[in-house]
Image 1 (tube, rainbow, N blue to C red):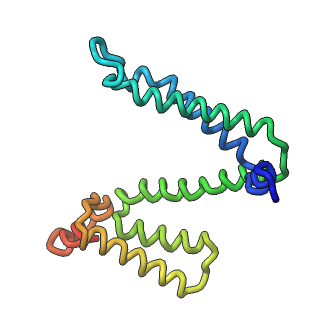
Image 2: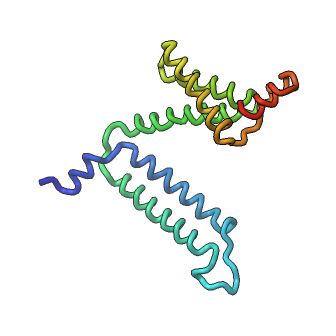
Image 3: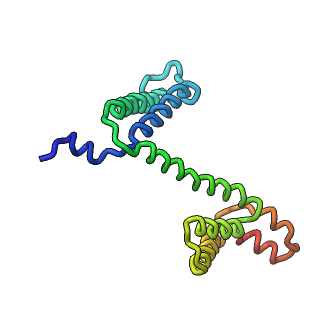
Length: 177
């Protein structure tokens, strides 16, 4: 029968030290900023203080993150730790894609931006055939029609729409696309 330590070693991931360090740093950041975010009021019972429960939560985060970091430090080293961290960093590329999309929507409009990014992300993921690109474009169009047309989500019209001739077509494009 396997012991708990054998099971722990088998299922432990190499990036535990890195995640424990990030968790502790974030918890300390919250602890340092707590007095400016949640006040401690005079003549109010302890459990009714606006800062009490957030303080309990943040102190708990600091304590448990520190214990996690301590456990990661004293545990045996296994290969692959930095390789896993590099994979996490590589995933940030898609956050950059999203930020570019958010920046571009007010300029180009929701439909053109969505079409551009669905096609570009399809190509980025390695799907190069015309069926994949067409599928991405159809999906992007469907998303825009559902969100802006059917669900009436208010997304500002793109600046490029200002160049359309005034009239019912421009109003339709600005409202639904």
